[in-house]
Each structure stands twice: as C-alpha cells, then as structure tokens.
Length: 108
Image (cartoon, rainbow, N blue to C red; front, side):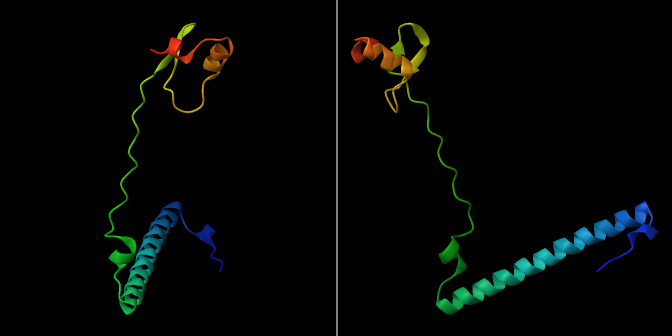
C-alpha cells in the first residue's frame, strides 16, 4: 500500500497523523477487549476464573529494600573501611589476617 503524501500540507499531514494515532489506540483497545473476553470464556469452560489464574489484578508488591547491616570490623589503617562480617572478606581484611592479626582485634 502506497499513499502519495507529498500533495498534503503540513497541517493536513499533522491532522492525518493525529487521526492515525487515534485509530491505532482504538484498534488496540478493541483487540485487548476481545482477548480478555476470549480468555474469560476459555477459563469459564475450564471451571476457573481469570482471577484464579492471574490474581485480582493487583500488582506484585515491590521487594522490600534491605537495610544496611551494621559494620562489625574496621580497618585500623583506614577508619573508612569497614566490613559487616557478611559476604566475601575485603582485601584489606584478608591482608591484615595474613599479617597475623586476629579478627577479634579488628572488631568495632
């Protein structure tokens, strides 16, 4: 399908573009409405509801943000470097332990 748009003014093309966007939205809404009706029919025939399958439409709760864990160990050479005792040991801690320091000596 080819339409010669060169014969239209800018204003006519803008109006046409608006009409096209409105028609696209209308058609998408109609497709969605038909799809929901089809899904409801299929679910009903199976003896379930869409809410049984997909929930009540509520969005999933966002994951709880974990609070920062308090530091348990501090680098005596750099007070800004701390470690909570969880996860992989930081390099500064591994180096101090390799030098013979005890973990208890670095406790806050």
